[in-house]
Amino acid sequence: MTRFPRDPLYRRHRFPAEVIAHAVWLCFRFPLSLRMVEDMLAARGVIVSHQTVRLWAEKFGRHFANHIRTRSAGRLSDKWHLDEVVIKIAGQKQWLWRAVDQNGFVLEVLVQSRRNTKAAKRLMRKLLKGQGRPQRVMITDKLRSYGAVKRQVMPGVEHRSHKGLNNRAENSHQPIRRPERIMKRFKSASHLQRFVSIHDPIANLFHIPRNEIPSVHHRELRAAAMKAWCQIACLHEA
Image (cartoon, rainbow, N blue to C red):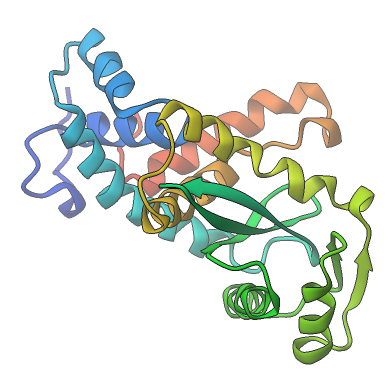
């Protein structure tokens, strides 16, 4: 069997790249706790602690997410849906601000302690910096802060403010709610920000809008996503 040289990304790690990448994939692709991932690896004969899995998820997950973000830059839709949801952390309210495009791909996510104009402006500016161009249409709920910021930052953008039109953004919070329950809530606002900033780009890679494509192409797109994941994780295909 041909042996490939070890990628520098995995230098000083005793486990093979395939094991590390698989553990990170499990952490962010499915709503699993670290101990669940530990047990799933143990079932395959890989004995590793949940703390090691956590370190892998933070180090390699960040690297993979940044790579995915670079690959998708400028390819997403110019119709943005913005929404915010409250998440309680240690008894304190934190607001998870999220922007998605019309196909459900996450554009930006930001954890903030306030739900006001200043917080909305931070999200808008981060969006513009990350996407490199303003959107054509902005869809939000009835929060007036969006309209105030839009008039200051992007006066030429069409703004549709209606709760019924923003189901796309509201539904995008669900993938975070599931791991939140599994992990028995996030420990801090920074913990939540770290998790979503890694989780969402990986979710984008494997997001296939089922209602908008023929079912016959779903397996092909899933296979393409897995191939892209192998490239991002520096894995050699068989």
